[in-house]
Amino acid sequence: MSQATQASGGVDVWVEVNGVERAAAVEPRLLLVHFLREVLGLTATEIGCDSGHCGSCTVLLDGTPVRSCTTFAVQASGRRIMTAEGLSADDSLSPIQQVFWDEHGVDCGFCTPGMILSAYALLQTNPAPTDAEIRRAISGNLCRCMNYAHIVRAIAAAAVKLREEGESSEEGEP
Ligand code: FES
Ligand code: FES
Image 1 (cartoon, helix red, strand yellow):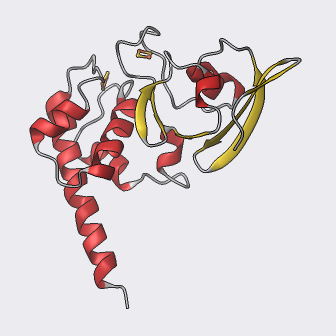
Image 2 (image 1 turned 30 degrees about the horizontal axis):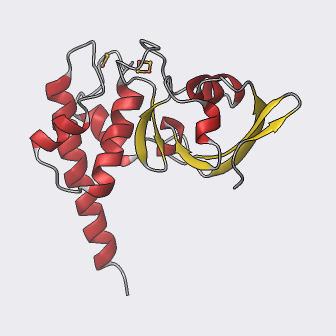
């Protein structure tokens, strides 16, 4: 994919979002969170503090959690973005979303998209995290409902579930 290029109506931005290539001409100072929500219509990414403190706007940029309210859309050009919409290919819950639901990791739900994406990124690189590692991974995501105990338990349970699913798919391989 190309990097951002200046065009007469703004700056052309190309991104791969949840596996789909998207492009648009945007104002150079447009923030990534507004690009996702207002230009691409991906509204699962929440805006909380709008100042880089709460983590509710977290998305994955090339697999790494970033705050989309402090990232310009042009900085994401040519890169791979994952939002909460990308967790599941259809209307069903992905395994990690299901575990958040089962373990009461969702209270009001405002922090949930960013929280789950931070957890998802952790489990991609650390399939068996300790509670301390889980807490460190979500330390940039604030939950105003103070639901941290349930959230940590949900992520630990998701780790177990994903490991079990990985083992059973390996056993099924020829
Ligand atoms: S809305 Fe981005 S960190 Fe709070
Ligand atoms: S569940 Fe309400 S902010 Fe976290």
